[in-house]
Image (tube, rainbow, N blue to C red; front, top):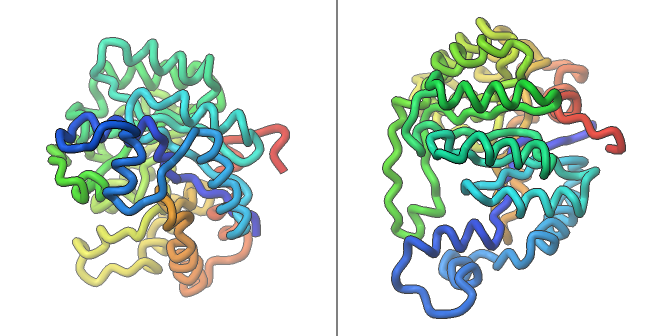
Length: 304
């Protein structure tokens, strides 16, 4: 089975430096190294060095390709450098705040000049509705560049790194409604739109949205701890219902891996593989979920 991970965060030096800007008690010097030390994580080094570390980790687990997400707005160059270093292994995603005045220009730079393939929107974090005209302008730009997708985080949003550093996270999860994603996605029927974590607590709404808009895909990433909000729901049943409604062609495997030394989250893969085995999902469906769908959406002509 070919495994491609559709959801990994690239915690670059710039990512850590952005967090450092909110802290007042760091020692002078390398802010990224200081933050990593406080978190008891490995310092990232250069984007190229971090990309090499990720390749070694993917090799160790037999993972062919991975999406790397620039996890703060403005970190597009870090992910672009990683993709340029290992173009057969990585596909670049980037976080964008569409409420900023330069959002369209920044998105165009990322997609056209840097070759990144997916715009990642976090409406609860940046406090906007997905059907806002500013968001629709970003979707229109993505739709104008075939091979580009849009990722919209819905439901529960909790950033462990911020909690560990004692930083506030003032999110409004009312903004992360999959039904609003359906409104936006329906305006651009040929644009792939990805809702991660099965909707992260808005599972029913994510299924409704995907059922109504065939360009909406669900990613399976993380531990899916949101299941605790649904009485009696289990991970096998999540996959069963998703396959019944969406089918195997619109489910994209992901782990939500992010930092080292933890590295790639093998346990997430094992749990999802076991869940699919428990509902007797056939080999063809599993191959699509664990690699085929990602490789189809984010084709690289030289990928092996």
